[in-house]
Every structure is written in C-alpha cells, then in structure tokens.
Length: 80
Image (cartoon, rainbow, N blue to C red):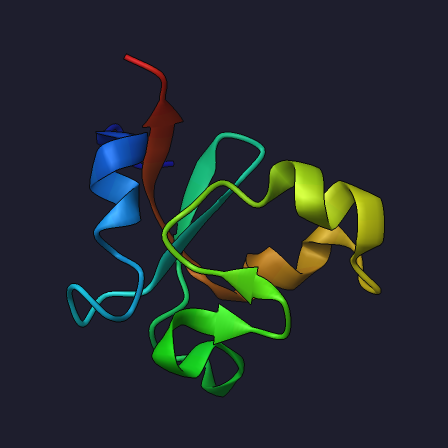
C-alpha cells in the first residue's frame, strides 16, 4: 500500500467536479476510481466521490468489498 496519507479535506477535492480525479475511501484506504465508467461525474448511484463510503457501503451495497481490488490504491485516509 502507498505510504501517502490524505485528510478528508484533500479527499473531498477529488470528487470528479473540483478536479479531474475521482477518489473514494473505504475502510481507511483511498482508491482512484477515475477510469471507472460507473463513477462518471463523481457519482455512482446514490454514492458520491470525494468521501469515505465505508458506512454507506457496509449498510447497503449489493456487492462485497472485493470490488475495490481492481482500483489503484492512492493512499491512506487520516483524520488529522
């Protein structure tokens, strides 16, 4: 995994609208989903990029967390 760490405010800028990058966090890991056709414009169904999706996906995702295996890991989400 990458040693790079990002704050939530940095993740929020990668929402597909403020910058071209589209990132999401899940269980403390940030993934680059920019190339995914499912994340065009920073939205995937009712989920929005640029944020930690752990709680949302653990509650209502129709797929398992293996879906992230095909995406590049950008770094780690940190609180401070």
